[in-house]
Amino acid sequence: MTGRQLPHTVSPFVSYGFFFLGIISAVAFRVIIVFQRLEPAWVRPVWYVGVIGYIGFFMYRFAITRKRKKAVRDYQLIEKIKANACLAEEEREVVMYLLSSIKKSPEDINYLLIFLLSIIAILADVGLAFYH
Image (cartoon, rainbow, N blue to C red):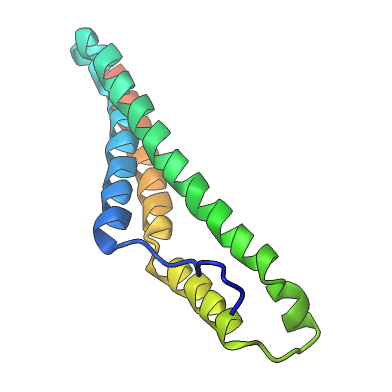
């Protein structure tokens, strides 16, 4: 044992809380195009919701990514796996943290939803352009 605190995954409540914050921000940015045509007074408040939400969401994602990279670096996991070295118990726990963190993260769903919402926003804008 090295005396370092082993990394651990956050609770599902925290993970999904930030996931939904990211989705709310993504929706806010995509719905601006609709408000711009239907209710321009809402554009600025919705933009702030999107920006502030993304600040929180991406700060959280930045911290998670830094935590993962630090664990890989501090425990020299890439070098040890390349050398086919046996991993100590603590190192195996760190690998388990990394794999669990990746497996539990809903980031892939987030990216898919942001992609789909972007397509819908483009279609809505084109539809509204022809409607008005």
